[in-house]
Amino acid sequence: MAGENGPNRTKVRSELLSGISQKAHVPHMFILDRDERSDEELRKLRQVGKHVHVLERRELENYLFSPPAILAALRKRSGTARHRGKLNSTSEDEITAILRSACYIPIR
View (cartoon, rainbow, N blue to C red):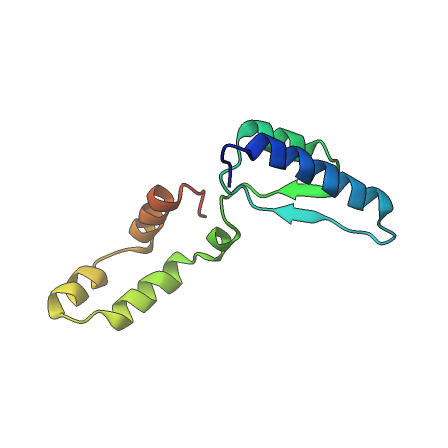
């Protein structure tokens, strides 16, 4: 998470990752989520080279969203007839739109 010391921590992190990459005797890659990193932090991390990949989405967990599964779970757990009726008329596209707006991620 970026805070007051964000740029300093990023410098240490990118230097640390670079050092590990130079000393590693096995093929490797560091995969990081975006978290709340600034554009400058991302630039520094990407400068480490081919051994660092920063994901597009903010959190790794955002890749686990499945609109059909979420809708099925909501339908199964809906308690009242009113909620069931509304969920039965809800589409996967509507769930996708809600996730996109809430998570700021390009869900497919």
